[in-house]
Amino acid sequence: MRSWTSPAKLRAKGIIGMNRRNIRYIGRYNDRHLYPLVDDKLKTKLLAHEYGITTPALIGTVTTQFGVKHITQMVTGLPGFVIKPAKGSGGKGILVIERVEEDVFIKPSGAHLDREDLERHVSNILSGLYSLGGTPDVAVVEALINFDETFAEYTYEGVPDIRVIVFKGYPVMAMMRLSTAASDGKANLHQGAVGVGVDIASGTALRGVQFDRSRNDHPDTGHELASLRIPGWEMLLTLAASCYEMTGLGYLGTDMVLDREHGPMLLELNARPGLAIQMANGEGLRPRLDLIERQADGADVAARVAFSQRHFARSGELQPVPVPVAEPCPA
Image 1 (cartoon, rainbow, N blue to C red):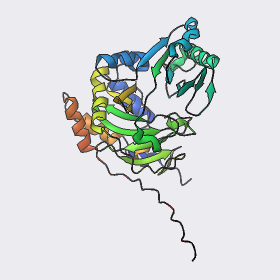
Image 2: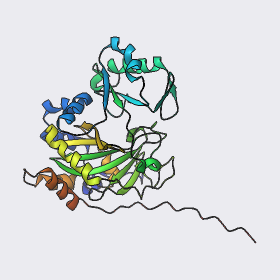
Image 3: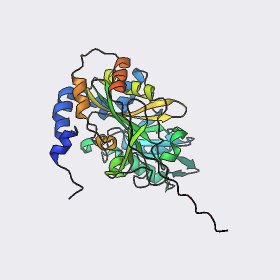
Image 4: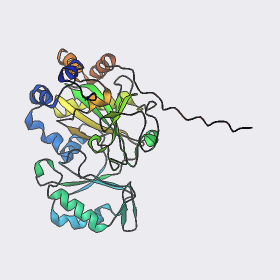
């Protein structure tokens, strides 16, 4: 029982639960009529384009079962691509094809798919297998992200992404999600990805978790997490904060990636972001949200980012993994 804690201790650390998140923040600050802007990835992409925010290039969409047969024609000549449901959540239904060799489509794990596999996956998306509420969906085909090589040793067979919680336009907490073999190359904590809390002030790693347990290194690459630092951090925070004006949503999760050619790119937005980010940071959201609620409205993006960096700065608790020292050979 020593691994459990009490609700009183969680409250003392400022941890918020699902009920408080839903009623106090989402219910109060997110108008329901705005949800389609973020629940539909295609609408999010088109809206971001209007606001000059970079997203992965759109190759095309499949909207009908009749169009399923044309998916291979749509991706012909591409070195790689991603197929995802427009209304999916939690990383479900996202298919990443890293490379194509003749008529074989190869995933980051090395698994081989053929034309029928692609068509079946797209058909499942259209039928609503991965969508919120099981409603009919649209398959979105995007260009493959060329993620920044800075993170090559921190991830396994997948693209790491950065989640930032934005409240009333202020970035309040951040983490990087690192794909693993357990997560099948997807940056999803529930499937086994590693979550790394990130200091709002500097973009440096604070704490690592996997399967709700602390860890100091990546389980597959063995690389320590203490040295992780996100380049162009202030630009990324500015991008996250500007999504408040773009959507009108007061409580928002922004998911971004760093492309080595295009820099920070918006992947998707979430009007109901999860709460595991608190575990990755080892700190509750409530004190930060309370502080922001006390601020006057009207601050611009730059002022909001500067405020968050000034008030939410933290030092990390990660320690480098010691390197074994070989014993000297006897003379």
